[in-house]
Length: 137
Image (cartoon, rainbow, N blue to C red; front, side):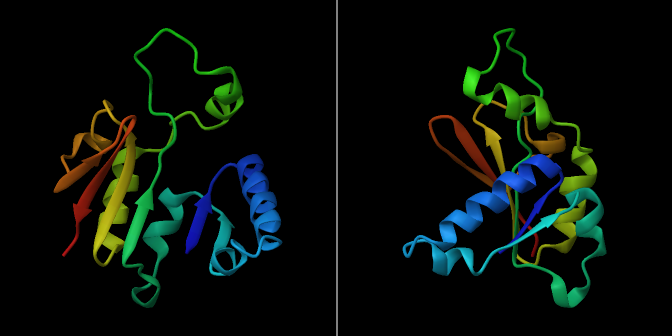
């Protein structure tokens, strides 16, 4: 699993979590198969060569613009400030669809609009989240 995180502070927190998980016998095997890169997916994905193309690209553009006036939960406010949706969504989805061999999966809040207003091939809904699946074959 190749993970990309564009925010340096969030990348440090992920790295710390991965280090802690390595000490847990139940998690260590999975974490050893993960690589974390400090990189912006919009810039990174288009540079993937044919041999580097993944079967699946999973996108989790955190915190899309909110329509509600209420603040997010207190424990999530800092993350919300750090990760407000500022990536060019069209470029992100377009490059992911060009590079993924099989599909692109996009995590969204259940009632959020589709990423870049592009309807997926199908969606899987949970109580608060939705996974939009874009087939690339």
